[in-house]
Image (tube, rainbow, N blue to C red):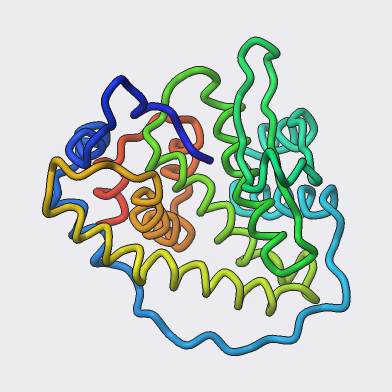
Length: 246
């Protein structure tokens, strides 16, 4: 989901982005330096077919409920009340996104499916955004923390999938491994390069490496209080790093 909190008359800079999150350039570089090593991804045979969108949405909800039982009621509300389009017009909306439509008092998710291993991850990602939007309403959340919610939903899905729909687990694991390679590989390298110039133009993709790293830390952390605070928009990036020791 692409946010508008850095939209203004002049293009935002890297320094604007850092200031919004209470980060320094060195602090951001240190955060993404904690990324796990990149490893080869084995080829995995895909299942003969993939679940339809509604089933994937239910799997994302089930996985998050298993991981965050104290949010189960909110997760069920999100699953039932979010308006989801699993077949948007590809010409108008080729990429997934989730937004809160304040005037309609609703959250809308656009999830273009491809009948492949990326579908469960895409749907979980947008479910993570939808859950946070239902919980924070109109309160603004900085983009790294928004994307951390979405990536946490991906990681939680992978963690819970063997018990929910084991036939899909290996293929989804391989696809998510490739996503980590993307975020912790060249994308991280270009982010670190951009951090050397505070006046460099901000790009939304820069949110992904730090958000992915925070999500991995949260998924593995034994205490889920920080994750719940994140979805409620009640934790700063600095406090989250302190809890995760990143």
